[in-house]
Length: 251
Image: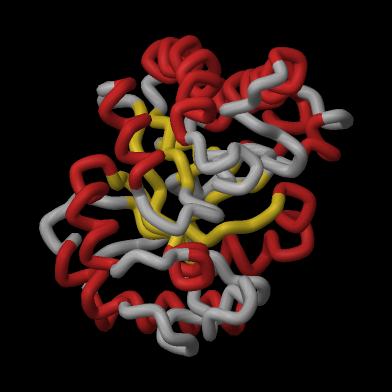
C-alpha cells in the first residue's frame, strides 16, 4: 500500500506532532527563508529526534523572491545560497527528494525560455553535484507554466538521474493552457514526485483530491507504471485525511 507524504511547514510540526506520530505520517517539510535565518544544526537534530518513528521524508526548499533562472547574478547568488542551506539541512534529515520551484514566468522573461534556461543551468549544475554526494534527488516543481516546454528543455540539458520533476496538480489546473495528456507525454520520463491537491481553476485553494476540477483519473492512468513519491498538499488535517483516502482508491 502506498504511504504518501504530507506537506507541512517546519514551524507547524510542533503543533501537529502528536497527531503526526500517532498516525506515523511521512512528511514533506517546507523550510521558508524566514526560518532559515534562525535555525541551526541543533534545531534540525532535535527535529529528527522528535520524529523517532523514522518517517520517510522529503524537503521543500524556500521559494519566495528566489529565482534559480535569474538574469541578475546577485539574485542568482542569493538563490543558490538559500538552496545550499537546504542541502546542509538535508545532510541531517536524509530526505529522498528536495523540491524546488522552477522560477519561470513567461511575462517576466518576455517569453524567452532561453534566457531562463541559461541562468537555470548555472544554478543547477553545481547543486546536482551536491545531490549526488548526498544521494538525494532534486525535483523541480511546475508553478506558473502554461505548457511544459521550459521544463522539458531543462531536463534534457541536464540529463541527470539526480534531477527530475515534481508535477503539481493544483498548479497545472490553475495555470496550464495545454492539455494534461500533452504535459505528461513530454514529462513522464522525468517525474519523480507528485504534489496532490485540487481547485476550481480560480485560485490555488489546495482542496482535497476530487473536490475540484483536476482530472486525477487521467493522471493516475498515464503514470500507473511509475515509481513515484506521492505528496498530499492540504492546509488542515481533515483535508489531508480526505486526500489520503481518495488516493488509496486511485492506487
